[in-house]
Amino acid sequence: MKILILNGVNLNLTGRREKGVYGSETLESINAEIAAYAKKRGAEVAFYQSNLEGELCTAIQNAEGAYDGIVLNAGAFTHYSYALRDAIAAVSVPVVEVHMSNVHAREEFRRQSVLTSVCRGEVLGFGKNSYILALESFLL
Ligand code: DQA
Image 1 (tube, rainbow, N blue to C red):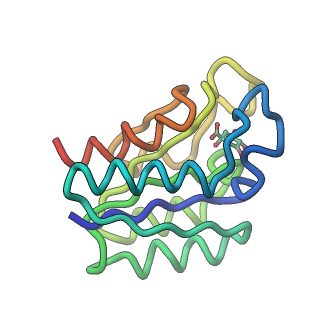
Image 2 (spheres, protein in one colour):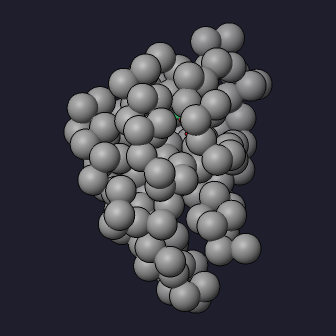
């Protein structure tokens, strides 16, 4: 099982921005924990982060035939990117949407995701463990 862990805009600042919301662990250290978990569960993971919408669309397009699933935290793109939504809809590789924070307990604009309806499912509110739980959903 090969899973792509895909992070979008501003997620590279994890551990440095809004620590009260996203915690103080960096994306690198979270990715290392995901890699260790995946190894234990016999899964293969790859990581990619971009602040650019088009690059994330390309990563999703290129995942077709290369990965069995995508764990996607699109960051703020979640709330308005029809381009990402269409990229997810265009491929057969299943995508699980992830958020570290409970987006429903925050600002109104975060309650809407334009991605969820084309994703297999969604995991949110569990901090870095949201990624682990989303990964596990592919391994059950
Ligand atoms: C986020 C939630 C989004 O609303 C926000 O724009 C992010 C991170 C999360 O992981 O909780 O950048 O996706």
